[in-house]
Image (cartoon, rainbow, N blue to C red):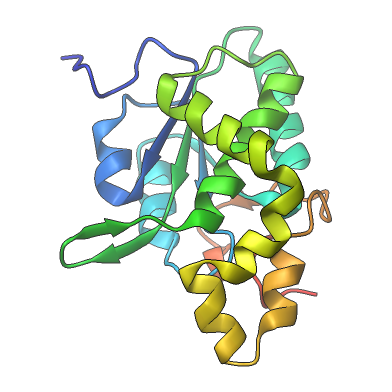
Length: 192
């Protein structure tokens, strides 16, 4: 049964964490966003895969590639393709901690989808896209200034954070499958 929170009537949806994923209506494609690779995307990606969705690991580094893969899938199907964008955030005993880097990564993917005409977005997805568009020029700084970024900078990993902020540095849409780990995604900070 549909609920006001499942965003079913929208083609492009956005939510946070495992609970958010469970709240959304099933989608043809699920994009899991963990921009700095510090938060565990695998449980969400595995649940989406088990539900029969195509799963992509997206973010700032591959937003256009993810949107292109979704547009290609929609053309292949010859029908409107539903898309759920899940910002991983940080799971805590008190719920999901908002992670600004994942908000911007989700927003970049949603913006890139809109540029391809896939733009029937839920209010939640529209807000993520607008936060990215409105602050796009500051994203690099904001990633280093956010909580996760500050922790990584303190650990001597500033270059990793800056690398994660590179928009469209990868043309890999981050297809996730049983033999592909979330740590190997195009946006993971450990990649060069």
